[in-house]
Length: 188
Image 1 (tube, rainbow, N blue to C red):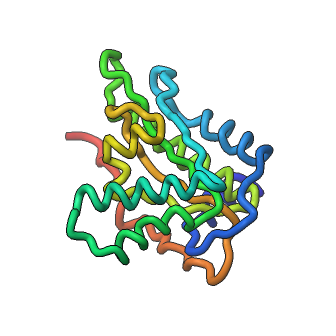
Image 2 (cartoon, helix red, strand yellow):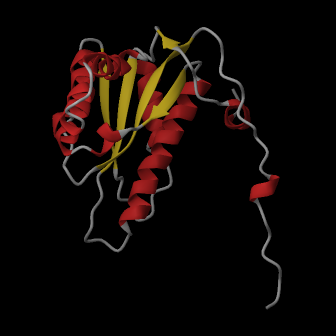
């Protein structure tokens, strides 16, 4: 697939199933992610791979975060939260490990991790897989970060759910961009 084709046709999946990207595909995807723009060459991105039985643990983390933040949540809602870990056969948690004491602003380091996440998704799409990028309250929770082996000050930029798209494909997002672009006129 040509890069422009991936850029113009990628869309988030609705339903993902096996097979997930294998070791070779993951190596290519992480190699693509490592090529993301990175002001200062700080390489702030961190990746946590969640698959197989680890999805059960991840689901428990999601449900526990909801229970801790909303103690009155009914059991069926907690179960729905837990089942989010099974949206796809593979989840990659993308985080930004930012260095506050360097001249590169933290926001730029976080954006570099987000660019790495996007590159990873594009690589997955080019390899015949698809993905969904999700966050939610769990992405901002210190307990969840710690359980994933991240530091409390790390920023989770996304939970990338990856696999093979199945079922009805999501409609292509409206790609109109003209109403969001303007040109700065010359002069004063």
